[in-house]
Image (cartoon, rainbow, N blue to C red):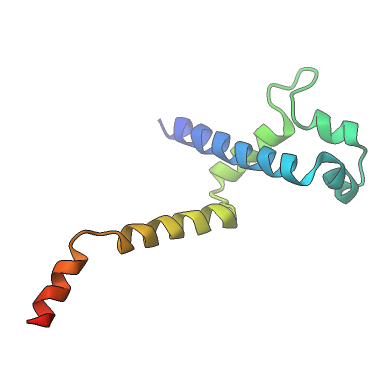
Amino acid sequence: MEIASYRKKAREIESQLLNKLAERGQGALAKVLELDDAAVSRMKRPSGKQRHSFFQMMSLAMAYLDVVSPESEVAKSLLRIEKLLTKEKAPECLEHFDA
């Protein structure tokens, strides 16, 4: 059961990583890593006898080690703030103070 939760979280992390890669461009990452575009492209899929791609392995490692990207933390914080601000009972409290 615990392994399934790691795998689910890993898929979410992998999705974030691949979306960011698509936004910023494969060539830019290749320059940072001092590789060519083809090497970065190969990181996105398993090759040879490998069962997982580089991104899948790193995502699973990040999920297991509980490494959370700052963006997902910001998103969670924004959701909590939104829930606090949209509670229905808040205006009722103000009515008691007005009386």
